Length: 254
Length: 254
DNA sequence: GTCTCCAATTTAGTCGGACATAAAACGGTG
DNA sequence: CACCGTTTTATGTCCGACTAAATTGGAGAC
Image (cartoon, rainbow over all chains, first blue to last red; front, side, top):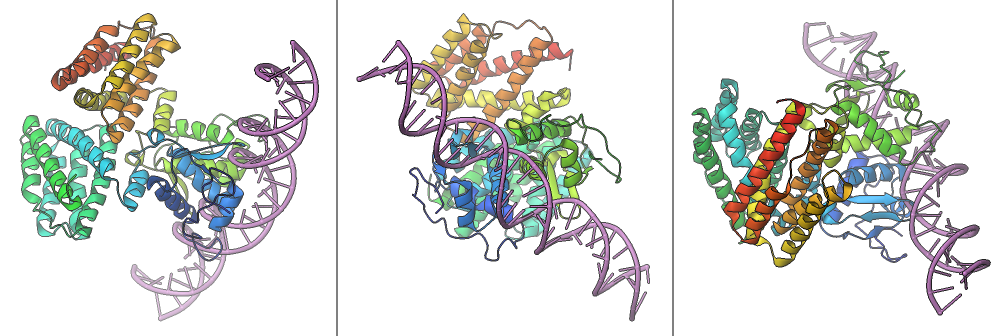
């Protein structure tokens, strides 16, 4: 007796209980939020739909109402749902969702990622990242540069298929962000970068052979080292464009 | 006996109880989250500090532990704090904060807004908004155009000092965002726009007389109507630059 | 017949106290 | 001094009751 219900007594299954033994679970609330978040992002819970009451839904998930409510606060905090007395808990329209929240992005990429949304993300990335690289070229100090050089060296020794290689890639981009001396920009790019990493994972799921990323990164690094903002902007724009082409190929045109 | 505590038994007051009558409060959890969020954003709870236990803190706020925990889930969802068994709840470093979350932005501007952070926001706005205007110029349809025209007309009849005037301003910018056909971009700009509105409110608090915004907006509208992406980009860049100058004047140079 | 207003109902919101669990801190041991 | 089991303690979870708010439907007035 739980799930979504436009009319009362209408209740889809949503898999079944979150975890078998009653309450004994590592990070139970996180699991609930993840499950419901994915369900909403994947469209299983459409905007405007009202979830069946807390008591019914929490029982269906086999968790206490407290744990269910705390998970709901998380979803509410990210703009996915809204609860009001008597009216129940409703899924908010898409434009209320905090799509740039790291968790929301993770949920979006947990299921079948929406091609249109990926396109939007790359478009945003193509706007923000080159500008960030340009700022980094103007403001970086030698310490920033050293981190980037080390990260790039690590990347050339390990492929992006390995975890250590991906970590080096993250370090490289994070170093650029820190060099911008702009918190807002850093947070945004970090979110986008994380999402892009999901698509990288997605690409490898499709067995698309990754192109060698070193030359692209090298050009960005050289421009930043030379304090050439315009060149850094262009080099990063090329990098993003190439990544987009790879992803587009893996998705089969889009 | 609650507050923050690097060493146990160290407890600042943090005002006092959230609301007088026990538990009987409209949106109590929201009030708690707001209070603590502002406290963290304003630096009263510095990153790395550990909050005194749930029991002690909830008692100090005169709310139940449930309500306190639910408020904490909200802060945790926005990356402000992290809780672990035995270790307690700690304020996360700034780079973990979701600074682009609408609530977090509101909390940041609730107290004395950090000048450096405002600078970061305007820098990001100067990157994103012109690009958005350019996309809107390429993709807008006649319906988008009509909304913008109506909003601009409303703006010319009412000043930004009135609520109806500000609503028209919001409508204008939202119409541009919708016209980009890019969800990620829309969400981001909406957050930034909201934050910028706080600064507008801040400007009027400083009695800085607002310049007439109609001509700037008119140029953006004309460029979008003409489907001239480059002109739209430049016009919006000018608009942002002028807003920045106003804000800079109100803050006394920055 | 339509509209307004009041009350009943239903649902989220809050409370308090109990127990389980995990990890940090402690102490003993090799 | 390093390692490992034990204790400690704060978070995590559960339960059941009560409060308050908003929707809904009906009674009453026009």
